Structures are given as C-alpha cells and as structure tokens.
Length: 443
Ligand code: IFM
Image 1 (tube, protein in one colour):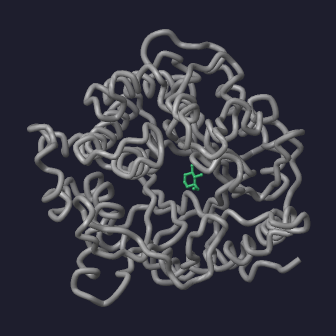
Image 2: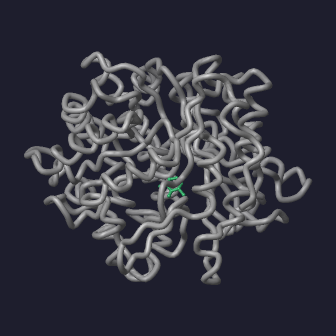
C-alpha cells in the first residue's frame, strides 16, 4: 500500500482530521417514519437519477450507525461531520415532529460522543421535505421561517452537544445546480427560480444563525463548495466567462455571508428577479460566523457561449487526470482558494476543508478495495492544505468525503466516494486501501 506523504505530526497541534457524510446519502429514508423528500419524488421521474436509484435504503446507516462510527474511530479520525434530515424530523416540513427521527439523532450524537469523536452538524444537506417542495421549496421566501422552525427543534435537542453547527451544505448546489442547471431536485432550468433560490437559501442560513444564537449555541459556521475557474482559452470572452462563473459559483454566497454584498457581475443577471427587500435581507444573511468550511473537489474550464442564456457559459473538458466523476484533479485550486478566502473573505477566522475526496472507478474487481487513485488524490490535496497552513492560513481541520460509498445524487449508487466499500446487495462494509493509508498517516 502506498503511504500518504504527510502524517499527523506534520500538522499543527490540535489539527482536526475528520470524515463527512450526509443524512439522505447514507441513512435509508424508508426507516423510522421519515417523510417523503423531493429527492424521492425527483428519482421517480424518468431520466433524472441514474437507474432511478433513491435513498430509501442507502447504506442503512439508520440501523448500522454504531458499526459505522466504530470504523471512524478505528481509522483514527477526531471528528465526524454529519447532517440531519428535515423530513425525518418533521415529515411534513412544518408542524408535527416525528419523535423516532429526533430520537435517532439523539442516539447518534451520544454514540459519536461515546467514542470520543467530535460531532459537527450540518442542519440541511438537500433532502427537502416534499410538502415544502410543493409550496415552491427554495423559491418561496417563507422557507426561511419554516427552516428556522426545524433549526429551533434540532438546536434545542442536539445543539449543546455539537462541536460546531452549519445551517446549509453548499448553497450553490441548493440553488444554481438545482434551479438553473436542473441537475439536482427539483430539476428546474429557470433563471428567475435560480435567483430566488440563491437569495432564499442565504436568507434561510441567516435565519438559522439568528435562531441558534438565540439559543446560545456556539461555533456556528457555513459550508460552501468552490470550484477553481479557468478560462477555456485566452480569448477575452473566455476570460470574462471564467470570471463570471467564479462570481456565481465561488463569490456570490461567500461574499453575501461574510461581506454582506452580492458581486456586481451576478447582480447584473439576477437583480431583476430578487425581492425588493434584498439589500435589507443582507444584514440577516451576513450575521457574524465563527468559522468557514470549504468543500473542494475540482476545477472547470469555462468558455463563453452566446447561444446560451445568461450567464452564457459552458464548461469544456480539461487536460488533467480525472476521477470517476470526470472531474479534473487540481490540488493547487485548494491551496489557492484557502489563501483567497482567508485574505479577501473571512479575514482570519478559522477555516476547515469540510469535504474533499474522489469517486474512483471499480471497472475491475481488484479496484474495489485497491483505490490507488483515491490515495493519490488525498495525498495531493492534503499536501495543498498543508501548503496553505505554511502560508499562514488558519486552517484548523480537513474532512474527507466520504466515510463510505453512498447515494451520489443524480449518479445514484454508481459513483463511489467512500474510504469504505459498501456492497449494496448485502450492505457489508469493507475498508479500502485508502482507509488504511489514512489510518497509518493520522495514527
Ligand atoms: O456527495 C456530494 C455531497 O453530497 C456534497 N458535496 C459533494 C459530494 C460529491 O459530489
């Protein structure tokens, strides 16, 4: 087995090594009287999710969580980043609480703490209750209040046991990916809906922070996914397209939450759709945070395409080695982002890499457990994180995506991001070579 180049002792004392997952991707929504989510209904539509897979059984973490936590502990991780499902706790999105759902997260939290792992909670990782989706979901401004009610309940039950809390995972995916590109539930391709959801997801973040501060919860942050944006060519048009892509993808959400403003190039395209109160809302959206999490996987090659609607951009295939997602492996983007975020956006508060990892191919039986590409990927990205620390970035932790293979959204179960292999016919878990490489490095 190829070892990782860096080990725990190369990082500052107290550096936090963790692993991440999310509720719908692993728990099994058929269990514990959870409500229907918009991913369940989306998956039923032809052509939306590969093979119409859904999260009904997933990895059955709902019943196997003790075994999964044992794996986390045995690998030597310090932290576990997980999420709570809104539909599991409030099946109709608002109103009656499903006590079985709340009890599950209560037991899970205790089990994390019993193993001396630090629990890092994300309140929402994409499984919107179907009943809320039917009211317009993220395009309905009232969602901020509905989400606030869910946050109130979870904060009250779990908040004081959490090492950190972030309201929403990857606001770009919740809004742009799902309402402009249409790749995720609810699968819309409509600029107006995208604009509304971009604003509302941020407003819901702000409302959640307000609720949690009201409960005296501490260590509140946010989690954004970033993608390094390269122009596909050196033409002026492609250079501008790459800047616009960067503004929508990387700057919009971070600048709103930390600087209280929306980037001008994005406003040009979407301001006409925003509610008249958008500027006032920015003060709720930009309430101070204690830390910022960055999910990083890849870069994009962005070209201008006048035949497309605003923002007139498309991405092209780049030259670098790719993971099984077809994503280029570009570790430099991670160190560059960490430096940019620290200097321009968060200005000294702790940063975390809250997700980083690769889907690797299982074209042969041998590759199932011998995931050498994942080891090289982690090695290179851990190196980039280390480089950022050496340059003065207050990076306090690095969490791998993901603990085990799971439901990879529109790609169903075919794309595997796990350090642990899951056999979906038996639900047997088997650590891969990457798991052991990480174990040796962080022992
Ligand atoms: O699986 C997802 C996760 O839900 C959010 N961040 C990216 C991962 C890989 O695509």
